Image (spheres, rainbow, N blue to C red):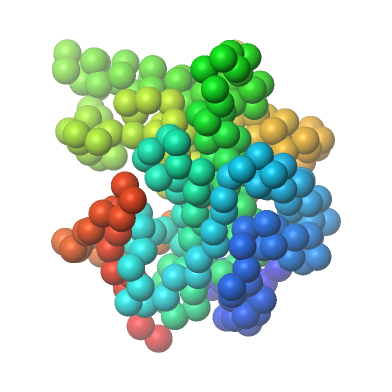
Length: 279
């Protein structure tokens, strides 16, 4: 796998190769392609993600893969990401979308094997949760993977609420993103599904979960275990799973915080994609 450049973009040869091979594919086909490229552990993870996505598709979920370019209407959160996997807010909606930025979105390029594999993993995890939401009320036994993911999400919500309470009492200062969530009318910390989407897409999630003690380890370690188990991976893959899940490493910190014209599409805020820089 080619290295990232000084701006954290993947090497141009890798980016162009990945984009040319994945254009027009769906996430299942993307996962299958990934089983042939990368380091051995990545190939193994890709195969397991492919298997999981196949089962989810047979169960009725629908997946789409998009490569975004400058000027495209994209989910608002992709403006500050290299890749993003999202579900519509309507829990009865069976669609899951995977987005990565193409080679012209300089400074935020997402067409690397590692980033695409990460988003495919995210699609599998969000798919597991969405499938649980679609179950009949008579199907009362929850899926073990969903239980584990909600366990992590609930622990994040508990931590956030405790910090907000301490802030109100003058005990702590909230981080900038916590303040934004606290003041928002659409906070990611209002329910487990929204919190899970935040965990899988936020550049702040790794540090936040790493700082939360959980049953003799960190909450991040628990998340990695849950994802590994959901994908039927062996324990020795946990360092790779952890690396794949981390968004902060390739988050373009210097993305301009400009006022964007945002339009809503099927419950997903949309904006126009721009490059971070010109070359």
